[in-house]
Image 1 (cartoon, rainbow, N blue to C red):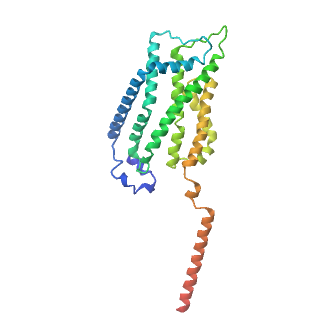
Image 2 (tube, one colour; image 1 turned 30 degrees about the horizontal axis):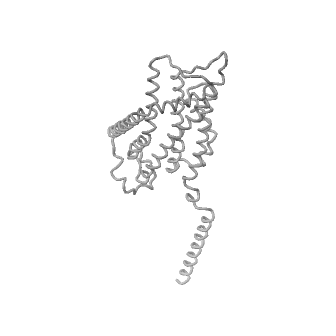
Image 3 (cartoon, rainbow, N blue to C red; image 1 turned 45 degrees about the vertical axis):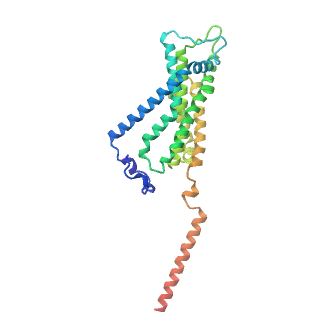
Length: 293
């Protein structure tokens, strides 16, 4: 972590807890990363085991959400015998990841914490809390709003001669991709929160580049959806734009205010007047001393 510290602000030079840190080598980083990944995998495995106990209820919840968006009398089918097992396993994996999200985020923080100063390590609670909330919020938004809206749109093309008979594999694949995409997207406020606290971005900077952000959002939406239809991409892009605006507000709240960064004009004029007065007084004193001599 030493190269990173070399470019950090000088205001942290006297941090009491920084002594002796930042000396990990490349192999040490790899070993630390391996430990964190193993712990995260174990946590996800335990989450899957807990989810397996309630897998029927979870499956009924997900399938019920899907079937409500289909025409009356529709059902999900599968033609490959292994698709049924794949559905149950993937569902347990997703539930396990959601349950283990706080612990996994703590492991992520534990890996990057050695490169931070003591004052920055206090962000561990907001980091774990915000990332966990973002994960759950993204999953709920995808389950209740995004995915049902997409399925309702596609089901409108079903007719007497064109019957919609979705397979469980393809449908759940769309469901999974949308949920994972929304989980990533809902981390945007968390990312901006920490960048603003570290003074790497400001609300003014984010607002100034709003047009570029919208363009990037639609590009990211196209990549996340892996679909060519504009409706699905727009469904992805709209919440991302909303989260970007929320992130601007967050950056404005937690970021340094201009009054704290630079002196106000009134203060600057007062200081200038004091300097001028002190200079005039000093010159008068020197003239008086010269006259005495």
